[in-house]
Length: 291
Image (cartoon, rainbow, N blue to C red):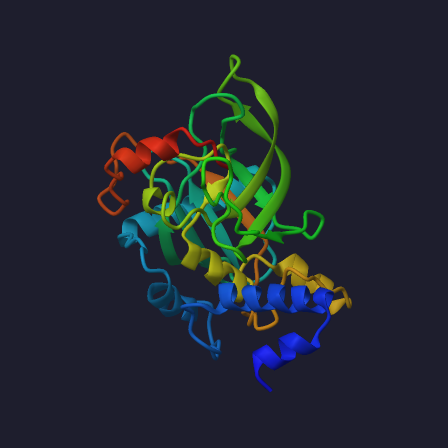
């Protein structure tokens, strides 16, 4: 039976549900390889390199340095990791602006998987926050959701194309960049962004506090459940979540932690993405407040 014939036979509510699931399937599966026979957490390295187009190539010494930053962040937060798992690490330094995936073995050894340009909070006007430092847990207490694909008053897809997953880390204390500074609550999220206007500008601080990542990086996190340990535990208890795509193939090492650091660089490292050249489009987007 064709999709058209199915469509004509279904009531409106069912059609909407079917449409939502199809969009989720396409968003999570697009440009990603099929079933992976996972033998090691390092199998994700090849998947990352083939799936994330604008990945960054860190030299070995930088990979080791970020592993040490991870260890220090967990120790400072008094978080003890249990078992092998993936961790999302973000460097908010204005001269880096990158998101990195690390795999931690059960014995505590850290392995760099891949990295891509990102955008974190910049100093700006009202409701602009610096992306907070620390360790943040991805929990079902703050349910994720999907981008609706609607444009705001500036014509910008703030969360990216329809179906992109928004990873929600809840309300956290962030540093205001207006009204004399200080701390206020902000919503911390990791999400895709406008593919035409804002994704080309990843690699510079540009958000209002959230973390923007490339769409293909978003799909990778989503498809393989890299931050979904709490969701996996809830699924095992019989809970279901509409936000999880039906064709997801989580690895055996789902993690739950986002770690945000600031390497406080004096110079931009050679491996980081060069800052975009500002033009007419950039000037327009600069005036369009976005998460």
